[in-house]
Image (tube, rainbow, N blue to C red; front, top):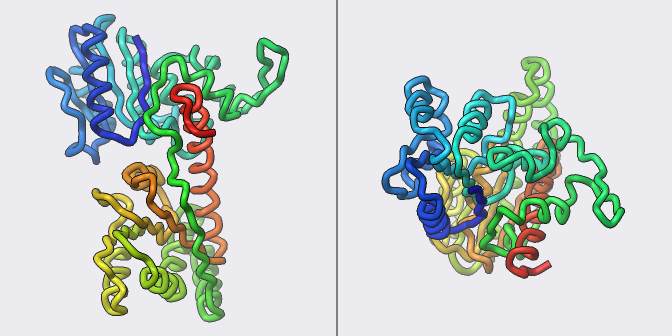
Amino acid sequence: MRAALFSKSRDEKQRFASEFVRDAKARSVIYVYPKNRRKEKLDIPGTFAVSFEDVTKCGEWLRVNALAGPDTALILENPSRYPKITSEKFRHLYRLAMQVGHRAILDIVPFTLDVQYLYTPFCYLGRDILGYAHYYAFRENYYEMNEDGTVRSAHDADVLAMKIASVSKITYDSFLCRDRTMVKCPTTAAERDEYAAKKAELFAKYKSPQRIVTRLADTTHAFPSRMNALLELLSKLEGRTVVYTNLGTYAKRAREAAQAAGVENSARFVSYQTGAIGEFDNCIYLESPIVKTYFLLDAESRLPAHCRVFHFLSDAKVDLYLYGELDHELQQIDGLTRELSKIKNGGSP
């Protein structure tokens, strides 16, 4: 028995997990969840629960293996945020999945980062689903010939949706809120000079691209031009608003600036990792995520369908790069979820 659920609702995940355990009639159940979501983990009575981060530890791994068998059920929650098959975590979990008789994945999205990583979560359910024995072959996006003789790319959203539909359930029509606006905040001459000086300093000091990108992004995100654009937007918005930043200190700074300008209007200012629970009419992504974009996916999954979303973007190259990476990920996720919903629920095209 194997199944996948993609849902933004914790209640839907809870119901799906309970029904899966009931239908499997398993002797034991192993439940793996993200460690930083410990407080939000599902309530599945009689299960052995362990985080993705701890499953490779010797003591936990021994306990998990002692439970594994043909009449054991394995439930993986949000496995898409651990996409790399070269990790020790993947090796352990794949070995475990091959030992149990019942496997389920519960997630808000089918994959993160790039569609090539759809392979990882579905590999736990079975490599036959996508039709590739190895990730490296699937990654190459080869052409495939259908039974009717038509040739399609392996990563086309409708092709993948057809492959995973037989084991999948999805409870939304599309992942992204439809009302989305780009807010341009072009840099000033002084900011461009500051950016150039910082870039020269970082390239002289570091060889790691990630360190350079992170520090350049921090510099860009702190520019007054971005804050001024935020204050102007807040002054025009009505309803409940949440503002997301990469760091909690940047969220605090934005809140203090809004308060000083008299435009706070009861808005919430939080980091992506902290997140915000509640119904919002407006969501502002003041900065593109530098790392761990799945925290933005968490934020997006909590938004009601009517919510207006605003992405801030300057003309600094590092800002354009980070937004480009994010938009690529979001559009691929939204494309696949819309196609899957069309198949399963008759959702909107």
